[in-house]
Image (cartoon, rainbow, N blue to C red):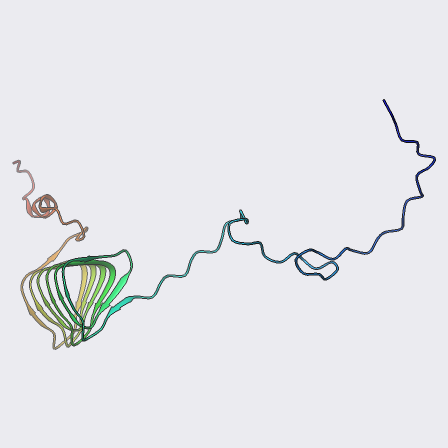
Length: 171
């Protein structure tokens, strides 16, 4: 309908200097980082949180479960499930321990289930150990049985029964 006449338009300007950005105020500077939630690019993996530490003067009664790491220096009366569980030299646990990696420097009274189980020379274990790999240092005290399983973290009785069932039999 209406069109603008090019006769009245001023001549094209020479290349303009970069305008200051809204976030930095400096000409040509890259924009500052966007506020959280506005950036849609894949972010770097989050840093693994530090292990939860139960100090030596702490007594816990009850079960604990985490996907993270736990370091026990005190006393726990209950079951513990974690990714990495470290039992300090002065620590005592009365209950079942289930973790991908178990490092025992203290005392456990109960079953230990882990992919990797390590008993240091100061370890005192009274109970069965079900593991994929195990290391026992000289001087460690252990009373119980040791059983290797490909999946020691599965707590089902059927997995243990299947592992010990003779070949060719049916139930």
